Image (tube, rainbow, N blue to C red):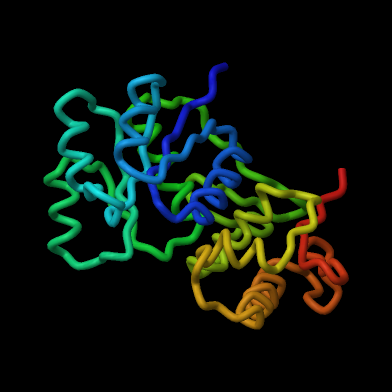
Length: 229
């Protein structure tokens, strides 16, 4: 099966690299451009299934690029920008954008929006199966969590953190990576916030939160979801 190709157009190369690594780990093929000229050259040479487009670019703005792109292509476009006022969002949609995500954003939210737009555009039919461990089931599509068949109420961040663990089962994840993927690459969140959310998850999911069976602390690394076969 051919991978869906995504083009990131953003002059923040560090952020583009972080996003690329995340998207490629979920099966996408990713290319990056730092300005509109480079992007149009890449678009003339290859086919892309979705574009993640910053607004504040050197030379032409992302709005101008999207308008020009819409004269020749209907490829889905997600605007990403620190400009969050209503006028900018309306301008983005009027220019032909399909979605608008404000910076800073979590990697999980970005992935969710990309997956949703891909499904709407290309008719994805495959469904992500719920992740089950012990007496706990996590459905990342419906964002529903149950324990012993009973619903577990989680906050938005608690669920995003749990979903991140479910997608990296038995893999130790650094605190920095968890903060980046769940709260956003450039959010000013303290590591203590992560520790608090870990404690809350354990209290809601573990039979003995003081001696967790699943959400483990990994010494000098971070945390992991341990699921034994």
